[in-house]
Image 1 (cartoon, rainbow, N blue to C red):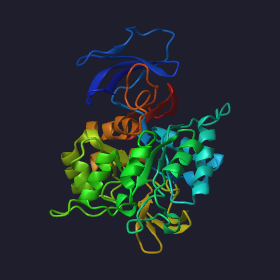
Image 2 (spheres, helix red, strand yellow):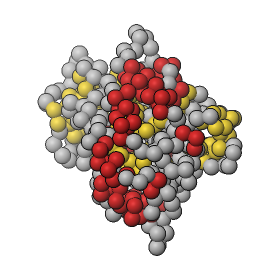
Image 3 (cartoon, rainbow, N blue to C red):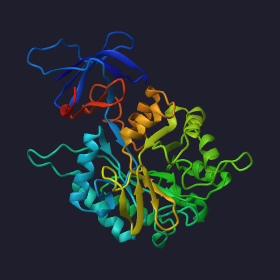
Image 4 (tube, helix red, strand yellow):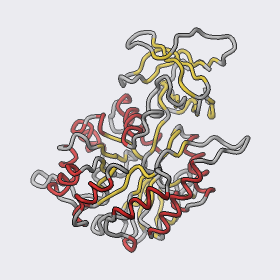
Length: 398
């Protein structure tokens, strides 16, 4: 299949007029009319190939959400094949063609059960005629090694001290799917030894933490390399107490998640964060809950009641933000149209950066020969024109 008259998002993080070819589910050739050299074997348009005219469209790599909990009434921690299928099908149709869902803070045995189920699901072949699915390429363990002071919507009853053996159990149960595991260093004496013990197995993130700057810096120097939803569930950054945010800034190897749903982070802070960290270190996430794709009402989050009104989801008990009800594709649109983030930067933060942050950039995240043929086509107004999964058009509004 060939896509022509396209504005293709290049590996240099700008759009180029050109064409691309997908063969057997993978990008084969990307050719630009001008700019950097094309990749892949040169070929002309074959009469036997399907040709898609993408005139007027931006052609993006399929998006990747490395932190979301659920949608359409299902949560990843439901731990059922039905829940996994629902998440993967819904996300694929939004243009999020690879997923790394997040766990809740739950009993260890429950988490191992969920992870074991995810392992089985990742190997399941869809039935003939079944709706396309996003690829499950990882799991982001938000808990249970977090802070009670900054627990947010996590269930305090199941918070526990970090444990390298338990971390290994999680990784084994998932068959290696666990890519990120959260930590509140200030709540875990000996955290540097823990990080040293697990950092070659999984990426350690600072999550739901009340850490000060000095403690966070120690964690990053020990090998932690990621920050869960920057600004949310962590101390505020002030001029004398820079906290986790300041430590992230001073640690160039660290990537940081950012929720751009219009509720979690003020647009001015989003813009200043891009100026502070640069587009190369930010990962756009949705942090979406099971209510995503539904309407207003009450939902359950790890045994806690959450009220959804419009785009806002809050705990009934206490009123804390509980997550979002906005998918990643809409977060990208909000970042660009309402927050002033350049489109090229937003695309990078929702595709290449998340793939790199979880070590899955060999096959995902950019439009390059040899990578999976996953695409999201957006019109000038950023509405969805088409979605391609493994080279097959699964949503066509062209």
